Image (tube, rainbow, N blue to C red; front, side):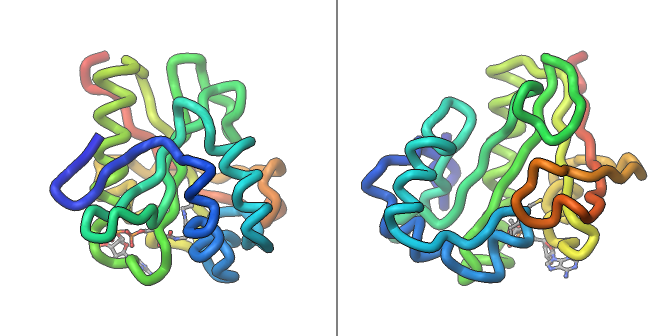
Length: 174
Ligand SMILES: CC(C)(COP(=O)(O)OP(=O)(O)OC[C@H]1O[C@@H](n2cnc3c(N)ncnc32)[C@H](O)[C@@H]1OP(=O)(O)O)[C@@H](O)C(=O)NCCC(=O)NCCS
C-alpha cells in the first residue's frame, strides 16, 4: 500500500536499529500505552513477536526509505475492546520529528481502505487517551465518529488505569 509520500510494508528484523531510534523516545510510547524501547535487542524482539503479522505495517517515508512509524489493527481476539469478529481496532504511531505533516492521517486512510475493501470488515474502532487529542483528531479526519463512550484498557502496559475515548467508523457498504 502506498501514497505519493509513504509506503506501508511488513516490518523486517533489519529495521531494529531504526525502530529503536524512534521507539526509545520517552514521550512517544506512553501516549499510545506502551513503554519506550530500551535496546535494539528489545526492538528486534518486538518486530519478531508483535509486528510480524498480516495486520501490522511499517510506515516508510519515501524520501529516506526509512520506517518512521507503525500502523495496524487488532482483530477481535486481540482487541482492547469487546468487538465482533468482523470488526477491528486500529492503532498507530509516528516518530516525533515527523508529527504534524498529515502522515498518520494518510497512513490510516490506507488502512481503512484495506480493512473495508480487501478484508470486508464492517466496523473499525479506535481509542485514545483524552490527554492525547492529536490521535483522536487523526481518526476524526478519517471519518471516525466520537461514540461518547470511554473505557479502560487493562492490557496496556502504560495507562491501563486511565480511561480512553472510543471512536468508531462504519463501512458504508454494510
Ligand atoms: C497521534 C499521532 C500518530 C499523529 O501523527 P501525525 O502524523 O502527526 O498526525 P497528522 O499530522 O496526520 O494529524 C494530526 C492532527 O492532530 C492535530 N493536533 C496535534 N496536536 C493536537 C492537540 N494537542 N490538540 C488537538 N489537535 C492536535 C494536528 O493539528 C492535526 O490536525 P489538523 O490536520 O486538523 O491540523 C502522533 O502524534 C503520535 O505518534 N503520537 C504518539 C503515539 C500515539 O498517540 N498513537 C496513537 C495511540 S491511540
